[in-house]
Image 1 (cartoon, rainbow, N blue to C red):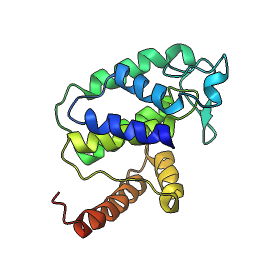
Image 2: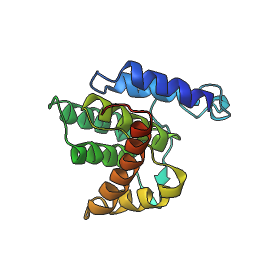
Image 3: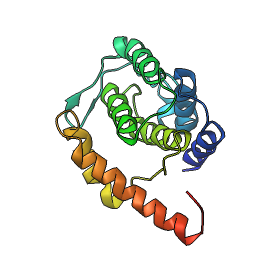
Amino acid sequence: TANHFKCIDMIIENANYKPSERFIKELHGVLKNGTSDSRKAWFAVGDYKRQVNEVGGHHTTSPEHVAAKMKELITKYNRKDKHTFEELLDFHYQFEAIHPFQDGNGRIGRLILFKECLRNNIVPFIITDNIKMFYYKGLNEWPHNHERLTDTCLSAQDQMKSVLDYFKIIY
């Protein structure tokens, strides 16, 4: 939890910058530093995975292809200065499909999504436990149906807006 709060600080401090491989790896390094995973010789803290993994029963990018896929994803994304909500979700889906780290991909992906909302002047949101299953189902459906993930994230955004309204924070 302490590491996650350090990552939130990094997200806020770097909100105005385009995402980079270096920053994403640094974020992972902070998130996983000092954890039981960091004591495993095969676990690459702050670097791309060394072993095959999967998410939700789906194959992910094999370790030998992760660096190229991440470079391609970030280069393509950074060609534009500003992105729509749907483009942010698509980038997030692609990141999760690559699944570049051994562990912590979901947390890193959602932190990047939060950061990119800030950078693109979109109200950020948090995927809470009560909607996490809709979020996972939405990610699973994204290639053929954008509706569930979009609706889930918009619902989370509405929750954030109600908090911002309560504290009279203009968005």
